[in-house]
Structures are given as structure tokens and as C-alpha cells.
Image (cartoon, rainbow, N blue to C red):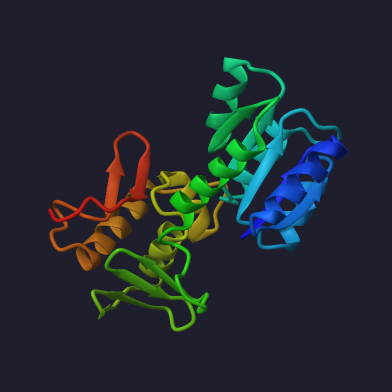
Length: 233
């Protein structure tokens, strides 16, 4: 797994880099949000440890920038301010966890490992073939654009396939209809609720045992949808 550490304090960057590398991670470092943004545009990053207060581009604006571009890398915020408002703002912008300075290195690494397990346990392959994504009984092959349920191939339309791929790359994360439209139809200015609902319905009809009581594709009322396995309906 590749970790990006963005913090304007060199000692903290070096300390975190050494300890994460001892635990088997590959580590990239940045001293501000702009450097961090340039790194994630070039490298495949699995998790970001992000300081709030940084020059050039601070943590909040960096997070807003990547989430606005639908970059869904999990983020742990580090902050010297134990302020509830900061935490609420960070979480609303899309942060996944928060840790106040001073913090335990062991706790940070444990939180990072836990977040990586939650995020990638099923969406990351369990073997060397990076084109295969598995989530419970669903298997998606990115190279052949084929989808299988319990080993049986499911025929999907192009948009249905792209929707499922988008969900499987971020299992259990909630997406609004506007985010889905932007990601699949590549339109920043306009989106259509009915288009999303029709394609979600078609996808459910193909991957669910009982589309009226879905096991996989869950509706989050008033917000959107997420891929979250509920067990047998």
C-alpha cells in the first residue's frame, strides 16, 4: 500500500515515513497541499495522512479540491487544534478519520491499517491480478469488462458496468446522484435524477437475487446510494 504524508513539519514527516516504512508501506511525503496534489496526480496512492494547517494549500482546501474531482482516496486528518468545528468541517468535506496532535505513532498506524482494511478489503484483489475486484459473491474483471456473480457471468450495459465498477472501487462509501452522474456521464453542469434511478434499477435487476429487497446496492434516503452487502434478503 502507498501512503502519502502531507505535513509542513519536516520532523513529523520523517518520523511518520520511517515508522510507516517499518510496517511495510511505501511512503510519499509533501510539505503542503499543492505538493500533495501533484503527487496524487502522478502516483497511485491508497491513503493520505493530512495535516490541517499547511502553507500554500491547507488541508481543508486540499481535501475539497480532491473530492471535487471525485478522487476517493481515504484521508486521516492530523490537527493541532482539538476543535469540534474543525472535525465536523473535515468530515463533511470527506475526511475518514481525525487524530489530534500530539498523537501516538502506534495509534495512527493502527487507524491507517483499519481504514485500509475497511476501504480495500473487498475492492482490492487478494492475488497478484490487479484487474480483478471482488466483493462477496461479485467479481469484476477490469481487463475483459466482465462481471460474475457466484462464478456466473452477468451481462451489463456500458453505463451499468461503469456504475458497478465505480461502486466496487469504493465499497460502502455513499455517493450522491450528482456524484454518480458526474463520474459516469462526465457532466459537471447538469445531471438527471431519473437517468441515475433508471440505471440503478437496471443494475439491481441484474446483480440482485431480489431487486425489491437488494443485498448489495443500498439506497441511502435523501442522499444517494452505496454498495454495502446486507446478506441474504
